[in-house]
Amino acid sequence: MTDKLGLGFPIVSDPKADAIRAFGVFDEDTEIAWPSIFIVGKDGTIVKRWLADTYSQRVATDDVLRDL
Image (cartoon, rainbow, N blue to C red):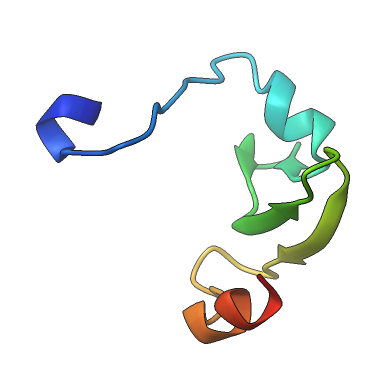
């Protein structure tokens, strides 16, 4: 898929939802992840986190870039 899309980074699968549970974004009722963005510092700590209230809500790109 990464080759097909021309991505310069790997994509991974989380079939058992382990990662999204660890990040605290798994919705047990719908069994999907809430839309979210994390900025992770060089030391591995989460510097900033956005979590949407609904699947259609997304954080603005400008807000993410400003915080980077």
